[in-house]
Picture (tube, rainbow, N blue to C red):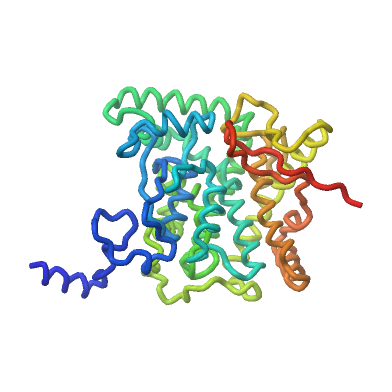
Length: 441
């Protein structure tokens, strides 16, 4: 029987791969370090939940990276240390927030961008970013957009519709409380939805006046990415990247799972929905519908029309937001000449889970958005600038030409006046001012 089963698995193309799947229950692993370049003998622990926006980003990244990891919710805890979240992680952070990555050495990282950048450095192979500098800068730009540029869309489609809100509330409740306490979970969910809807107008600018623009933007994202994923398995070609992982935040965790937007996505953008499934498969599995696409990144001199069309939309939709937040950040720095390295970037020290450095206004699909300015956008923008700074002159000219061709001048002309870093040595675990920049001249 065992011999027949092995023969069947080999015919099906599964033989020899089962023991190497990350998270598999098998006690015997067939040389996983050879099968997965980023494999670790001891698994990372991903404190997360499937309902969590940001967990979708790190989960997809680690799956495609081929990392050895397991997942748990704060309520479930981990074997051998059930109270680690309550006694160690949350007190050290200073607030509740997921995902958190527990490292094999006992330390943890609590920011998705910090997690991914740490793992890319710790495990350089397989690389989840292109070697070509122009494509790598583009990768981190899309990473920024995926992380922050679609926030209004995901929040509106989750909390403005009762069917989505109820579905999300049940997931949130199971992650934070006793999964058997259905009535308690429903009550907590209703309170959470009410809190979100109350905060929307001021904190993120979701109002009855802006909702049509937000929905228009979401449908354009669906249409343009669906056109792209009909021809290519990943955003930058035949290989997954950190940009794909960031796009999974909104396009999977909210717009691909929540009841209301998921139905729209499946009907309007089935190839996009198919991509969300592909991103949650092991890194060694090519998309069955696009297996003929070479497993390489695009050449910056020969980008497909589908990607160029998406980039034009992205720059038009995200560029004004980036510019407005950059201005708010610059004003925040100038408002107090005594600011110093380590200062938390916020106007409200009591709001640690989502920092704001002032207010901003920008146009989105012809409608003005008024909301809090979040420094996260500038934090990630500086990673694009780091790649550009390391380019030679020819590459910088190529990058400039690309951005100008898709309306992305704002990403060329927006400097970061004071570097932003993630504070990890004391709570709260937050974005702070880095080393003070040296005066020019």
